[in-house]
Image (tube, rainbow, N blue to C red; front, side, top):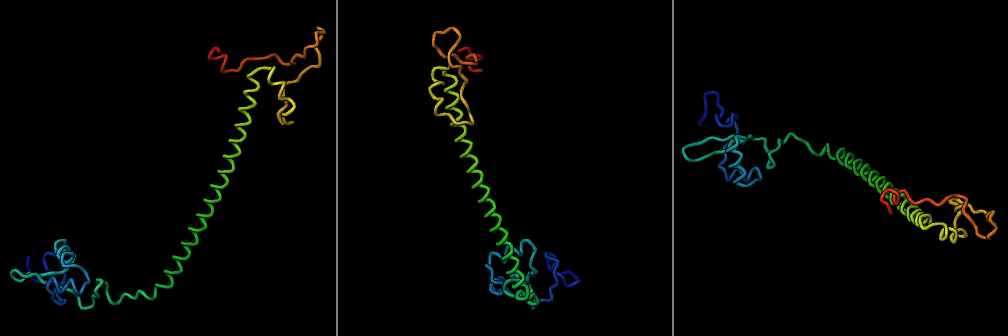
Length: 178
């Protein structure tokens, strides 16, 4: 597990040309815990060498406490990143507003459908009840759904009104047998 002839640590295959630190010193330099440094050593993601029982971490001279190269200039990307994030936030707000509008439309359509269903259920009950109750609601019906057509007086001369349509049982009553 020591160094080979190429000057690289065999465990991590990293050059040993950087500065040597103890594990606790390396954790302070990198800004991470001692256990995190030991985990990196185990995974082989950080250069290290063993000197007897001691373990030294090899860090390049140009590494910062966050582990990034000092040559990385993050400040140049900041305005572009902020602008990108603002554009994404605006897109998300537009999507949210579109979803709210769609939900509002759906609620309206659902309410209209429920109201129409209630009206049709009432009308269905009237028609199923027969001509005696259907005739009593003729005065309140809308022109969109006219009631049964009646003749003024039948030919028999008994003064009874008769329906122009024969009374039929509901389809479900015919199937079930009521």
